[in-house]
Length: 319
Image (cartoon, rainbow, N blue to C red; front, top):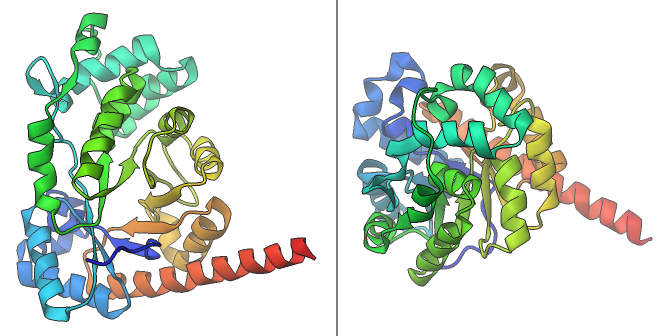
């Protein structure tokens, strides 16, 4: 597949077609088990000019291959291996120790303000990302040192994305590793992905903490994927925005319309992301063909407007 030098303005998220169906339009839950319906959403996005697809599991990878065959176009597959990436602690995937990890971060390693925010608020309001058992045993320094990447398991997970060009690796695994001081494993994951011919982007739910550390060590990634929109991010929007604006690498904003009010002004929300935050692309989830088409077209126009605005400002500054 021909290398895409610049990311498309948008990437269609695969979550609605996988385990997260319940988060997208509950009344369409059963349709999202129907591969023909899911394919119709992907096809509508393509017909509106969308060229990039987020792929995590067999079902949407299979549908992506079908779309490739049907269109004959150089579509961009974006592999998203989620959390079974081969990072192990005590013989189990790192995620199975999340209670112990998050409590250790809250009690021992995170800055006091972030630790307090997670402990008192986010662990209750954002359970899927920050919830943990406050009675879980803390990790010992020896256990943290023992965390390791099983390269064979990581390669097996990456093999699902053999037809992809980009991989959004890391996720919670990377957030935990960086927070625990094991950036060496994140760098190892980058090297392995590159040897497979993939272009790595680090996905992080904790960008205000993780991105500055990755920039400091010079992690060899093409860019980052972070949760950011006009109203919100974790841990807070302003610190995330600062981290995004500080890097010269490409940034993909996921959850770009996650705050309820933003859907009333999609163009305004995306103008802010492309012009103010300076992101290169958005990764959005949808359960309907109409929304897929609308968002693809708005994203294309909004980024083009941001490009034109920057070009005019550059010309003005030069003169």
